[in-house]
Image (cartoon, rainbow, N blue to C red; front, side, top):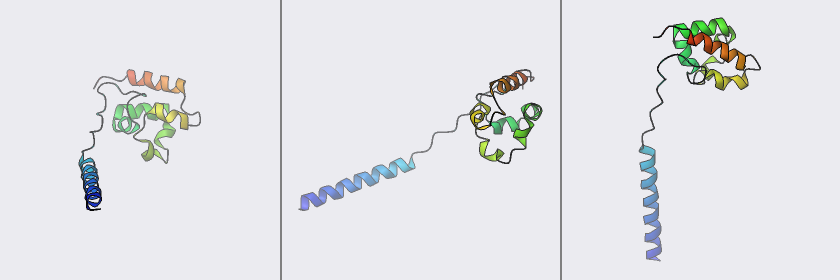
Length: 108
């Protein structure tokens, strides 16, 4: 009985130590925004809005996005990721036009 109790106690300690070590493992750093031109595929909406040039493109091409009540909830998404939820307001043709305008922006 003592051996069984000692074994269970040892297992509990090992699991507790493992859980503690896992909880203290630092999270991986967030991916940095890609350098270069803004992209409908890879640049987050928050980053697009933070950049005056790309924000001007959004204001021209999809002004309803900047007025959207839930903008704070989608700032971490890309325009491509938002497309399925846009009820047809953002489609492949619109994304192509926006990307063309992004590509026309001067290098920063």
